[in-house]
Length: 297
Image 1 (cartoon, rainbow, N blue to C red):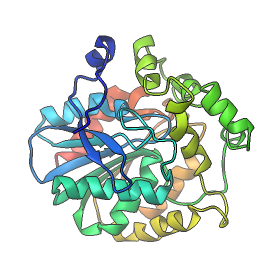
Image 2 (image 1 turned 90 degrees about the horizontal axis):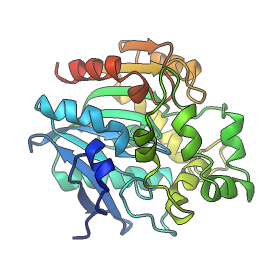
Image 3 (image 1 turned 120 degrees about the vertical axis):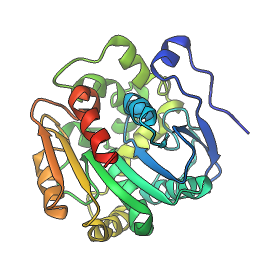
């Protein structure tokens, strides 16, 4: 078994876990956290771009201490997972990777916590396996098409210029360490933790690929996959859902929240007006207790 790299002491203090590994159907090594009692029911926590399972570190510790099993993978190309240059970095592949992880762990019940791209990936998996899905926690994300894309993200998609910015100058992961926060600033070691996996052109391959995989029109290769994800959402309308939304998100603004409230009208909704896109990080003292209470019901 190939294991994830040894973490430096400063990062291990924040991320005190021993990740497991899975070889995905595409042949790449996926790193994932598996914390809490080993049972066939678990909370599956899915991150987006440009984060990794580091985003969920404090929530995982809190939930696992309360007796919940927590599975938090790093998508291929992200975090401590392998970063192959030639992997099919598409929404369909990422959904298949998560499905393979759930199958490999023998899970019979899965509660979803999703953020950013984790929404499309997680609900893509849920559309395939609706009978496995329990409670839902939705954090500043989408699982449906939208005509809106912030100019700063659109810039990162330009042919030629985009890779130069995202991979050459770390112009996506680094700005996110301050642009995705509003209530507070990340501490220097927290910033280092978010950026640790993305320290070179090669290591930023999937950060760039995620940006390029945003489907804005039907000609995009992932458009049909995202349409299928959206079509599957009504299957989950009766699942207990909690919406937690950072009101100062420059990307997933309140128009996305309105869409979610229309899809899950019975969901409890907590909009935190002064929290940014990294809502779990920016308002942890509010968000973590809300999620914990929802999942322990």
